[in-house]
Image (tube, rainbow, N blue to C red):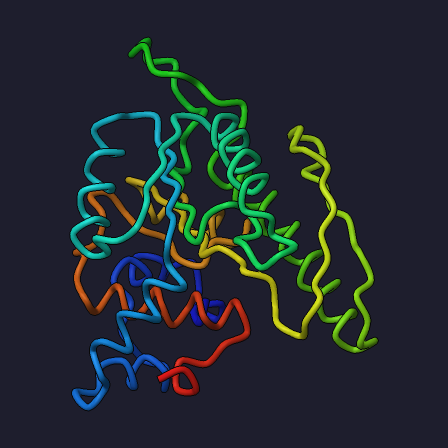
Length: 241
């Protein structure tokens, strides 16, 4: 988000991209009430799903995210198929049609190479890659966002349906009863080889591409994630502060 015009050669910059948007500058302003900012963060970023074949990286990412966002609840999956099940279970409990996260989580972080290994290391293998998972979510986001916009224009509560298609996601129905955008998740693709995998992840719909090890989990990164997430949800941080 906010980096769509970058070329593939610039992908590594996405790992620690600078705070360049006006809203991001607002967050960095010393006059911003930290208590108000924290309330916004806790409201918008409540749950995170991390997908990686290796427990080592799941633990590394979870530890860093918890240090940056101590309040969040974190779930993990070893394969994209397991992630699909967790997402469906999560959103069946929080009801996106009532304003809950459309895909059960406010942030979904996935390794690209979930399915590429004949290394006999004993880890679970996935039929889907990380970009497959992100693409499935991103396509559904477009359907939901378009439907919500149509509903807003018609000033009615027309229901719309969506499905996860060939990957076997549950078929569910949702509707938007106000003029707000759905509570979409921030999508982050991860790869130890961002120069090779970054473009694929971005084309699939990733809002950010991170390398391994992950970027430094600090306030600067937290603020950038918040601004990007709010933008996806049709909100402006300046109006919330």
